[in-house]
Amino acid sequence: MKLQIIKIALSLLMILGAATAGFAQAKKPTIMVVPSDVWCNTNGYMTTYDDQGTKVKIPDYKRAFQENSDLLAVISKINGMMAERGFPLKNMESVIKTLESERAENAILTSKSGAGVAESPMDKLKKVAKADIIMQLTWDVLKTGPKKSIRFTLQGIDAYSDKEVATAGGTGNPSFSAETAVLLEEAVADKLDNFNAGLQRHFDDLFANGREIIIRIKKFDSWKNDLETEYGGKELNVVIEDWVRANSLKGRFSNTDATENAMLFEQVRIPLYDANGNAIDARGFTRGLQKMLAAAPYSIVNKLTAKGLGQAVIVLGEK
Image (cartoon, rainbow, N blue to C red; front, side):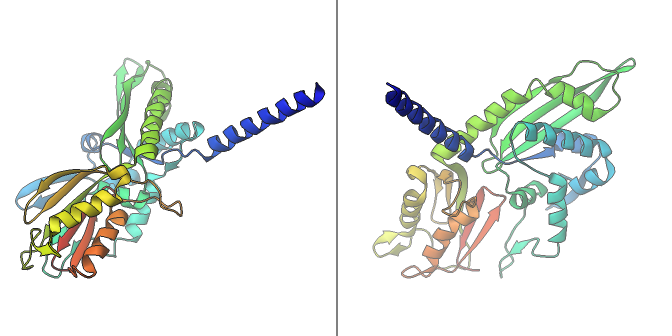
């Protein structure tokens, strides 16, 4: 009888040990908290540039962090609350400093013929932070007599697909507290767990089905061939689609546009990590296609560029 009890106990310990090990290995999404465009615009932290005659406003994150102490305090508070719940965060201020140190490097990618790919400040932040989720925060302080309350909106944005995967918002109870960060903590506290549950559900789906990216295929005007040119009896557009089908996770993708000059693949599912545990982005995944096109029998000179983490572009015919 004692021997049987010991065997049962050992079996239970093995089951619990396996469950604990599985839990320890479970990965959570990495997150970066950023102020929303609305907040930056409302508080005067925007810059304007001319895009072929159209005035475009973009957030000036660096100046916002340098000049607004509330922003530092609020993001620090959110970072702390998320860390307490076991979600790793990237510090946006540190990411901005990294960007500044790399500013002297190739800020704009151009081909020898002058074609280029412009990136927004957010795209550049995503590439440096390598976060899975952008936690976009908007808030303003409301006053009622001597009391203050805070109205906020949190949006969890998939950094690769730009899809909103979790949201929370509301207005906190009026308080005599003068500190914005404390008001935010009081307003967010009871809503953050549901928000995080939404983030984790999305990340679990990514583990099971892969993350989504976009791949665009284009051609330079100077290239004499096009996507209908045949190689070994097969049109180039078919060759490319076959590669995407063979290399996407579970063969899941959508070919939403295909002409003799361009192709667009959306909802291309790729693994989260490579064999070494490193995160895979659109550029890294699409490099395999780039190399295949450059090698025999195709021998097509091409240029690979990326927009943020989730979009890659191959332009055929030049570097």
